Amino acid sequence: MPRRRTVLGVGAALGAGALLGLGGCTGRDAAPESDFVLLDGSVLRTADLRGKVTLVNFWATTCVTCVKEMPALVATHQKFAPRGYETVAVAMSYDPPAWVVNFAQSRQLPFKVALDNTGNIAKAWGDVRLTPTTYLVDKRGQIVKRYVGEPGMDALHALIEKLLAA
Image (cartoon, rainbow, N blue to C red; front, side, top):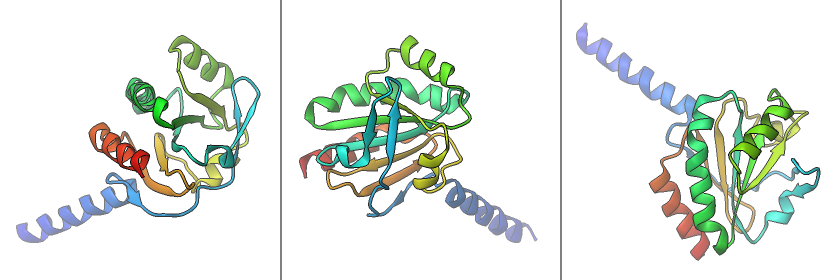
C-alpha cells in the first residue's frame, strides 16, 4: 500500500502543478486585442505594442505574491526598456482604483499600469482569475509564455534576451 500512496501523491502533485501552471505553458497564440486604460486615462492597445517584447502582468494590490514580485518586475523593466521592452501591469477588476493609484505612485512604478474595471481584459487573456498571471509577448504580438505565480527571474531574463535579439 505505501507504493500506491506514493504514486497517488506524485500524481496529485503533478496535477496541482499543471493546474497552477507552475512551469508556465508555452504557445504561440496571438495576444488578444485589448484596450488597456492606463492610470492617466490614456488608452494603450495591444496593436501599439507590436515591435516590442512585452510583459503583461495581471496583479492586485491585495495579492501578497504580486506585491513581492513587483520590485523584480521594476528591475526587469529598467534593465530591458532601452532595448524595446515594455511592461503593462493590469490591476484586476476587484482592486479598488484608488489603491492601485496609491501603489503605483508610492512605489514609483516606471511602467504602464492599467485598470481592468470591467474584467474584460482578464477575460480576453484567458479568463485570468489567479494573480499574479504574467504573459510574455514577442515583437510580432504572439504569446510566448504564460506564468501563473511568480516567474523565475533568471529564466525570464534569458527568454527576454532571446526575444529581443530575434
